[in-house]
Image (cartoon, rainbow, N blue to C red):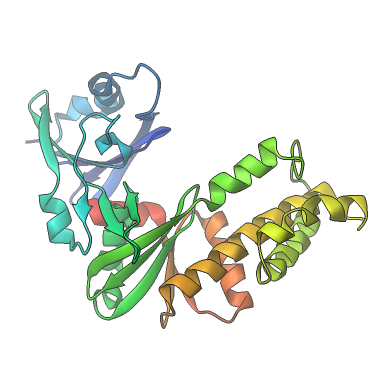
Length: 293
């Protein structure tokens, strides 16, 4: 046997594979996302693995993300919350690629108090990785936030994911920036003005997001603000609104954990510090690997 395994996050737009040997990442490669038109998953995976195959085939491949969605390589049914890591692992679907066992991990599903469903695929690996990296999360009630295109706020109770909410903060920001009269065509450049706008957006979010949106344009027309300020304002308004809404919906936790890209986590940490909340940061890649290992 070659003595290494392959762990991967195969999302809509990108494939990330990690070569892991004796618990250490020895290499990583990238490939086309599972949502690429005309994609042949087996061919993409073989191509991505090609640089490593000279040392022999991996012992196993474990993949999370949209690879297990209805339009992915193989649809894997969602595991229902509350879900422990053991239950999640058992919900995976197995197949083979050139004789190598491949596990495609399940996503998670839950419903709110009104019975409205919610789902995730890929983020659950980060959540279970956070439990592995931070043993304190295994007891008591905790809120873990995964900011992004579709931000997730998950509740972990005594080591099980009991529920979560999805907020389209990142997607809304992109839509406003690209297609609205508020910020279409604007490109960030002046960091100081952008930071000032971000702080103003956070403050305005406390009194309502929808009523605050047009301020991004009005403050450029009548308030002497720059496009950089407006972009920061919209970002702060949406992130601030997300935090206000989710804190009201999910309640308080002694300490919240944020997982993700450092730049985006910086923004959320700034927003939480403004309201005096204590947050713990965890690296997204480290959590994915810990969750899949």
